[in-house]
Length: 348
Image (cartoon, rainbow, N blue to C red; front, side, top):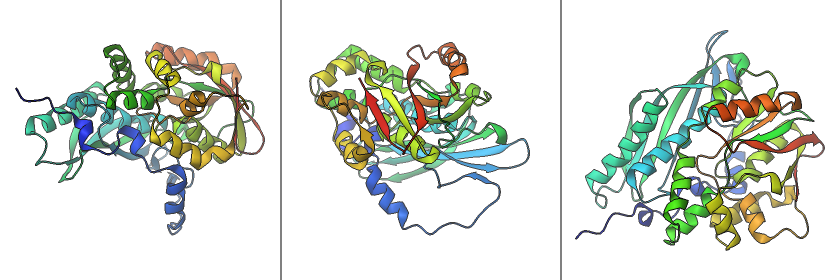
């Protein structure tokens, strides 16, 4: 009997844990020449945001992004579904409505059965159907490791674009999905993630962040991003740096997937969590007695993670209602923005 294909055995990393470490990426981009000024380019490379935004006219701006990675799970269709959900999240994080996507495909065609590759593509198409957009084409290459993702395009009113650098002092911070995907992927690779843990992982990672379209119309929502490979701390620091503010969060308020919490307490973590901490740990204040597993959870790379929203306190309940109405029952307030040097202060 033929052994089932395990996609993760073909890659050196998986999901958003494959991302280049923040500090290394910053050095790479520092050498890029400054682009010319384009008056219609509303969001470019200046703020480490989730997607580029270009104004077409007074009522429309186009949002463009691409995201792809190597397998985070062994099941081919689940890999395709997770990768596609993750890519579309960047469109939702800008407050936009996706309108179409193209597949980005790299496969070791001499190692993977054709049926496995077809399942990956089918998983991505399934998510695009769920998002009510066409998967209108793409590009493929023969690659040494499996790679899949999407180039996605969306539309948004120019006045409703949600950047990651417009937070205001006094804003509350709301996180839409529970943490722990990276930790669960580490356990999966060791064959120690049980069926319930796998269900929680896939269910969370394939939940489209479509609530971003609704949040875009709320004037009190000042900043928004999605939490992915740089972890909660890394993406929150992007909000802090761009907005010139500090953030205060409480660890006890953070939503965590139940299976991930148990695994974290047992010592499971990813190499990417350590790389993340080395990149930005100097900008984070932790309680002196914080357990190591909590620090690593704060740096845990999320794949297809939740939206992180900075909004005025008076509409926080309205934002939470929007999250819950679209299926995000673990969405909650995790902290607030305050005047101060850009950094994150973590309380118990």
